Length: 262
Image (cartoon, rainbow, N blue to C red):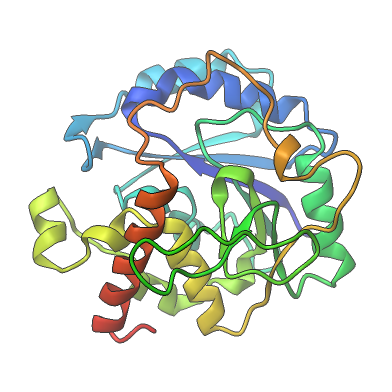
């Protein structure tokens, strides 16, 4: 039987968000079987060590502690929220993966509606709450896909759902390995790709012919109601602005083309 798995990562400066995220998960109307927090030893982006014991203490105090797996891993950038699952034997090909970010508290119906859309289409499509179109140039307009339509870039900030089987062995080619510094990333012509997990995952699924869609409209959750306001949940060290994200994605596509991945 398939397991429902929630997968995310964090950075050291956001560790105080973890208990808020776990509380948000605990309130979901559809409960996952496993929650995986991928936690590297060092954050390359910030050049800061992670405090694994502090994380374990937070998990121990959570009502979800028996479901949580702390996966100590390398830092692959923001894509650490999903990539390490490919090397975890506990996850099987037919398992269902919900990917979220570490700086939002979520509408309690998020998991329920991601799963219902995913199962409605026989697990053949990836689904998200917020999807945007690939930027065609620098300073591209921010085009959002309508509810119930096919999209191009799935935004993890709002949550998305895939099957583990969508990620094949060649997914490793889309991720930078054995990186110790920002200089390493620059030397490999991967600076924007390293920070563009939503684009990388979405482009990878595109390369495999996997359709990505925005969930269908309903009265309980849409993009505007995906988040629950929580002033304690901080976007510390966030790189997020609309213009920056799209320009970053455009440049990342050039890097992926140079690497002959798209």
